[in-house]
Amino acid sequence: MPATEPTLPTLSDFLAAPLRVGEPDVHGPLAVFPLFGPPPVADYVAFADGCARGVLVKELDGGASVNDLVVLNPTAANVLLYEGEEVLGAQQNRTFDVSVLVAAGTSLRVPVSCVEHGRWDGSRHTEAFTPAPQAAYPSLRRMKNHAARARVAAGLDARAEQGAVWDEVAAKSSRLDVASATGAMHDIYEGRRDGLDAFAEAIAPRDGQTGALVAIAGRMTVLDHVSRPDAYSTLHGPLVQGYALDALEAASHGTPSAPPSAGEAEAFVVRLTATRVTQHDGLGLGRDVRFGGAGATGAGLVCGDELVQLTAFAEGSGGPGRRARIRRPSRRR
Image: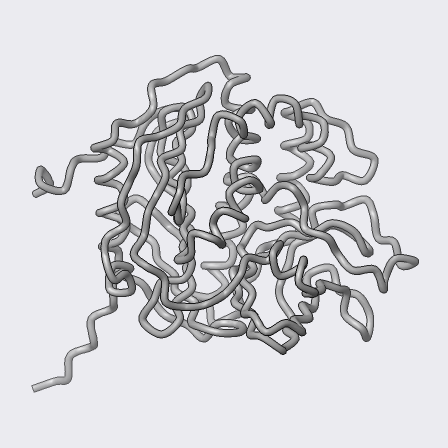
């Protein structure tokens, strides 16, 4: 008999217990359901916490590259770089293209995208980057994820498409009526910080929280999860700023919609974690996993048998503000 191909694992195969969904915080068109995961196994700290301990992100020594940076981790802790996190300074601001777990006592070259088209300041080449108060907004992160997934499927490294990133940041700036002399994504956030902070005040982190399932204008948008509550507590603020920027734009469309119900949120998570994934060699510690189908696309980071990080983007039919139809698992045929 011919040999059968092995069955691909699901995301739930790397979770010791199911992700639990809490009651959402809602502000305007933004609804954020807190997620709670099983007790963590892998030991690491979030990137901003690593920087406080001595981690450095710098331009390449041999000559700067728009789409590569080097991370120096002289500390005794593993450090998680979360896809979409932004770093400010040096020759131009960047965001990480993929999530990476940088081992203690190592240095690593990582793929990034420029989010400041109009600045390339060679006089600041030796300057270390600083963590930004925000991560990239979900619609930009989704676009970058799609490009990285296509490259991985073609046998290439996981990276975003730089020209598309610049175009999207410029379009976002125009849609939100924020001018930037250097085309910087950071300036969009600074120009709308008062409105963003109102969202942030309404979306508070919970004790033990490991992630968030986000709906904007009544429609599932993005899920972010890490295995350690202490790492998530550091990521919460920057991620919420990103969610809020897309929510501000949705609010300007004047199409309010009720948030999804708790049952719909739970059904989305159950269906997502049943999705089968492909595994690939990762940068740093762990393996890169990618998936598409069942209404979501995304990527994660697995160390051993533990899902350390997960980002999923809802992919539904219909225009902005329309809710994807999600049936509870018990009613699916």
